[in-house]
Length: 551
Image (tube, rainbow, N blue to C red; front, side, top):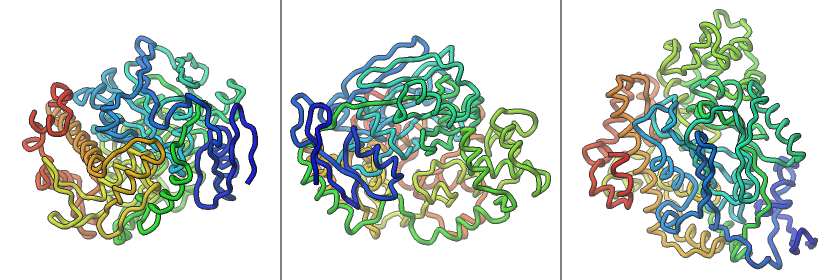
């Protein structure tokens, strides 16, 4: 171990093969350069400065693009209690400041970028940023996880959530630095690929360590499966997150921060993080038994003649989900030997007949895609298995010990566990029991206390995860009602993670049957409109302020 003067504080550097801990100055940046392949580096402050912002003391930025104004406010303690952070608070903000009854491509649709409560701390080796909005692909509220370093950098810059509303008249970049946000005109970046955009932003800032998330030509042209890509090439948002930013004319978000995150009890936090990782499986692991369904996804549908690696890189640079783009371009190819590259470009630019495929598998001429393929392409990828096109996960039938029975409905413990970890901002910070799908809630509560100093109860954490699940469902009920009134329900698709279906059912599924199965699933568990959309239920969930918005 060695110490070195960094800024105004002494730092202690530790080599640890299992955990990447926190340091805005060095740790994550060194790990990025090494691409996590050699070692993980951790450090904490020995003599913390007075007045250092606490781990939970970050802000929300409300960015109105129509008026080009930014309002920065601290996160209310009540919101922390109810939603923790990350996906939980991001869902609430999307419900509060968005409009479930509006079109995805409308000024009323908000897009929220969030970091979890533990992002950038001792207990978050794999931080995730979360992008939440009403999807232009599915027509429902979707949350997309973005791996990489953007979430940690956003927290080091002083923010946990960015709520983006309205629409800019010009192409802009949101520039974030240590508690401030500027809306910069960057029309010269229009038409650039995501990697060129990131490189030019880093060059303009004179900072090779600038963290960015960008959209490509596909997002600019509102391809319904356009993604958001960070500077390291990590992408997310196959349900059209990039298209929503494109509608709002946000080409990129650039972030750099050096505000410290004070850890209350660093040594104890390290030990607790290790203890929680023992005896459970990572939250992104898939249950066994999905191989057959995965085979059905690819059977007769994968363009094996093509160089998938090269095509995936190109689709990524264009800002499209690579799996969706390749599958749909393959359908447009008249011959397996056809060059798919120009087809990908035409989809991204919406040119010619091929450009119609930009509408996605539910709205375009991609009717030859198997139904299971369409379902998988309309689900956000929360794990490597999801990204590789595997079918929705399978859970135990209703009435088993794997179901949490709350009011108004029951939900699989696995889904609650995953949502809670998404509130914390890292699906690997605690292991999930393989048999029950449960987390060690007491251990997670202790992990929060050791990092932030905040005292929470296991019950409050479970309630926060349940509240997040309920809000997502309430929003989608309102969205479904609006779609039926507009006559567009046929181009919408809700694909929940936990459906009780066996492998053979997945292999022979069609969209009509799937939609009926989803509706039956929600009715059986108490998540239908009749059970859920009641003022009393909103009061029980402590979200009565959303009644007029979501009823």
